Length: 611
Image (tube, rainbow, N blue to C red; front, side, top):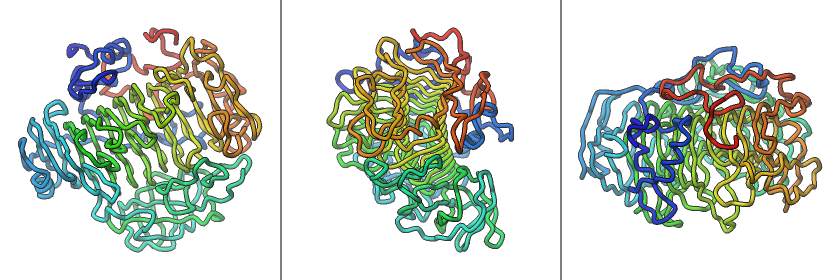
């Protein structure tokens, strides 16, 4: 196994868990290992300490494929180049307590490393990281942290917490607020606020606006949050009440009340009539905090916490080369492995996440609560209900992740939960690229989304024996202006229909709904509607250059490229020569020697049968 170049150097992957019988976190899964061997062109298992971040270019990588209104510069997502820090402040060995580790982190100078030698650390309580300090183990197969209990975090609970000094600042009680009085155009990097009290260069600034009408606005972007246009209404973590559309930016300059920001404004629908505003913490975000080379096991934790790792009011920080094991009983599993909360430019990469309870709020990496521009790249997710999810997020990238054995049974064992998800009002300009999993879903549980993209990904539409909601692409009602480009979709022999699409406001998808590659525009799983179905979910959806197993061909169909959308059309006559990536300028150094890109209409010599 270790001589296979796919696995070479991947310490986080060497003990993949066998979950089909007795669960043992130390048992290697020959079945999964064999599956990954067969998919040799998918090197999601290489862990090399090199991060690639493409330089900004006005000629975007997606130019000629996506409309500029529907896309952003995704190359700026994440923490950038992760520093290889070599100055060791303190070295600790097995037997060290949480208090001793926290003391070592607290006293470590900027740019330093707190080193945890190989061994097992049995901890009770929360570990707290520090700005510009790395907590590093000897490797996720060597430094094993076993928690018996965790901590309160920001009141939601976590085991390893990365937060600024004002960690409790949140949308329900922000420390500072202002009106956003000018600078609304897409791309602008200069805005005007009514007040800049306690705002600093480097501050994280959350911009928001009122939701507006909850009835169908026609061809406009629909910021939908009520139960008249979503199944459950707003979820309580999507920012200030009645202001679900958001974008978090970083302050680059302050001159009077004129504020420079990066990145620029994403959405084209900001306007003075929506009472735009802003809010922020009085403290600068924690920045430059790193967590590397450890294994974390929460199986013995008997109380649920919000997450195992949490970033709160953080920026330019990272998790790299970790193993996170969350295989307690259903009532004891932690809700999320990684929760990115009100944070920007966080990177989660080269890691292995296993286990969740089987209820709906059981996530791998959750970019949410007003977060923006995060990068989740080159990870394995196993036995998790939903691996990659957004709950009030903009501009993030989920690149080259692999999921297997999605664990979902919330009273309906036949129901398939997707591993790529929008789940809260306002999720926008998010990219999934190079993903391998079951399905991509823009849901309508807590509100609408817009302008999200999936590119060069493989979605089978089938998780084991599931028979309900078994679609590769599922775009619910009120979700509009999305892009599905260059993907490989479906399962030969199971999917018998290309699409089930709502064409009226009250429609039943019929018996073929679960057997379709695409399910589009329904307010439920093609039946049992709680509010209106949405024909515009389909007419505004760009589909281009995707292979599906029903047609057994790549489709370049002019009627599917959304160029006829009235307000935010797709490109008329987009190119059939697709770039290798929408966020990487070239093959990244961590990819290895196998062909890149691995998925798409132009890839030949692949080794998955029937696609």
